[in-house]
Each structure stands twice: as C-alpha cells, then as structure tokens.
Length: 158
Picture 1 (cartoon, rainbow, N blue to C red):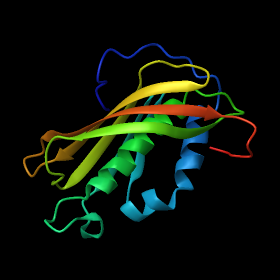
Picture 2: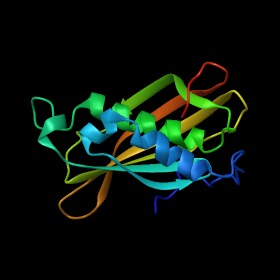
Picture 3: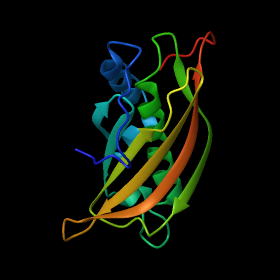
C-alpha cells in the first residue's frame, strides 16, 4: 500500500462505483498496456500504478524514458482525481509540471497520484514516482504537480 505524500484528506467519492469506473477506464488505455503498467490501489483521492522495467520504454542510456515516466505519473494523478468525480464526468489533464530527480532505473516502478483539493471542475493533484532497486528499496525519481478538469457533456467517458 502506498504511503500518502501528506496526511490523506477524508475525501468522499461522488460515485459509488468509482473503483470499477477507474479500472474500466484504465483498461482502455493502450499506452499503459504497452508499458506493462498495472493499476494498483484505488482509494478516494489516491491511486497507485506499477510498471515493470522493460527495454521497450528505455532511452539511449538504458533508463526508462522521461516521457514514459511522465505518462504513467499523469495517469496516476488523473485517476486519483477521477475517483472523486461524479458519474457524468470524464477526466482530462489541463496542465502538469514534472521534476525528474534521479535516473529511472530499477527492476520495477511505482507511481502514486494524490488529490490535493477536490473541486467540482478543477482538481489539483500531486504525484510521485519511485524506482525499486536491486536491494528492494524504493527511490524517489520524479514528482509531478497536475491540474485535472472534470469534463461534462462532451461525449467523453472515463
């Protein structure tokens, strides 16, 4: 179970089947499947995604490419926000900023997204990415600040 980045607010989901909605939406993401990413914990305002190391997502030095790290961390943040949206809403990222803190090297990776404030239309979130080393310890490799928007009435789902 991921440890929250700060004390977890007691968010209340607006949709009773939020976990199934997140799982269904995540399963539609071909990019996540291509990366081998898997949905982990799904709780109100908090989502964890894991990903094994794969040569298919590396850059020229053998580290996982920053674009892959950003994409999975964006999904973790996005789905954290989606857990708190009503049944008529879809989630889209309006903006994110990522800080790469260390090379993305390890046997596996863990991406945690956490809602900061649950607005009806805008949801600021924070994310952290960790690499699992050969010694089994997690190392923080990236942080993200992400603004999500709840989209309604545009024919989008999930």
